Length: 165
Image (cartoon, rainbow, N blue to C red; front, side):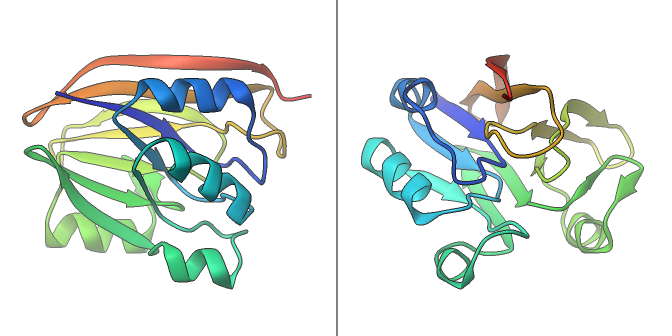
């Protein structure tokens, strides 16, 4: 079993609560818009970090993380794209990736809207952890955590970090 902390859209913001949740996970997955190398460095000091770059991320961050990240966590196929859309409204890049080979878990960020939706057409779970940072129009800062057990996702939780301002 692998404990995952899933976050997105930190926009250069990180605090002790985020780091405390990271320390409880086996891996941290960040779905783009890190905003600064400081966020990456602080997370990497604590746990292994997987991610993708977002639309606000600079050239240095883009050299560290891909636009599209496909990987296995245990036996679970994962696809991560910052601007990916959601079931029924995928971006062209996401549609192409899913058509080529559908994962069991598709993760995106960008919208700052927390979502967990099942895509029946493609037989996959879509997650968007919302935004853990303080930049944007969201009212509540959020993340998710869950457990990967083989190819199953278990114990999915929403973490509310408090108001954006």
